[in-house]
Length: 242
Image (cartoon, rainbow, N blue to C red):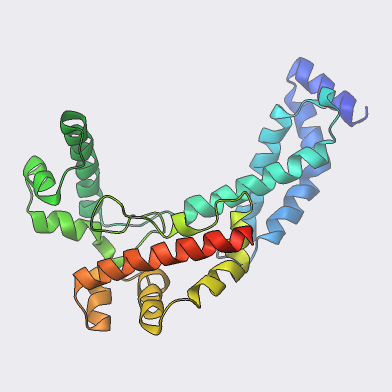
């Protein structure tokens, strides 16, 4: 049977043997795409597994009646799954159990207070609701001295995240991968601002640790950070339309 006939047969019967036959014919695509992303901190075997699972999911979703070649359909599908894997992995922050439990409690308390008042709670309100000190709430925000690119900047409700300043196009992964746009944007910053970016997003230091390193107050770090992210957001936005 040719490719279309195999897919038609699988769609009719759901026979796993037919699905496996289709998969074997296209595993080379998973291998090629997995190799493309090697060298980014993830082993080839892990990437190949992600790509292979995406291949199987793609087989289940593919409809040969639409006239599209499976290889044309599955290549962006697998690539998208690998990119999602990297994004999800980059957002993981490993925290001590105590901190993880406190963060879970903070999340629950935040939802309850927002539902009751319609406003985001302050650290003082959260501390009272959970039964811990306000200092513990603040420390939890910087636990482990790590900063996820998805974490909001502290101080006010208008905070942005480093992730949010990156281009929001479909090829955002390639933009970050080549770093051309980000590198150009960073050149618009002062030497002090670049030092802060290195501490916060390069070495992933907390605001408190960054303040000590730079010899300024934590409040100044927070203010500078918001200013820097706004500046980068505007610069990157311009670069995407030029």
